[in-house]
Length: 226
Image: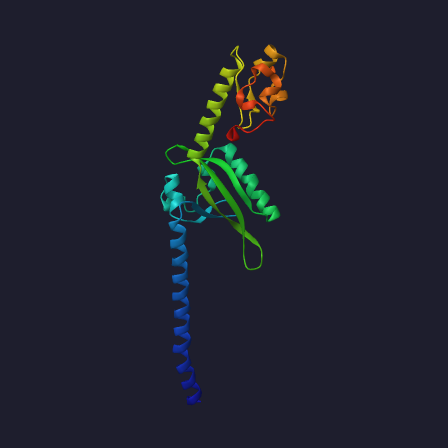
């Protein structure tokens, strides 16, 4: 009996040492991946099925103007107005029902100080070991500047399009082969051709031969070869 007890005593330190090593390895692994997540310039997040934040990297709270403590446990709806909150809910719901990730979803967020920012996000379903859904995870990228630049470009294009369409002169552009790539609508009133009838056609088809430009002579020879 004493011998049996002695054997048990010798095994306990060995088992305890293995457990301690496993815990150290786990902490090192968690720290490694935490550092990786904190080094990216996108927001990584995890929420439970109700939409409450359970985990995120350093970027997300800084981007939204909150401290990590303020964001932990808070529902994602605090970051957006009701319209966008409903949109995001529908995406979460679809991912939950189908299990298919949602990618490149865009919506508007509101920072703690009330500033509007635009994000592009992905949403993936989190499952436990038994396959039961437990939450969602994804990456959120700041696309505010790209969104604003696109809006400025659209406004500029609309401004100049309106200007050209109200001129009494025909405005047109030609590609490298001397074919129309744009013709202002006034051409229909002046020449009787609709713009869409001229797009892609050679300039030489719409003018008398004696008025053809040198660059459009011949069988649509590219300007670069003249």
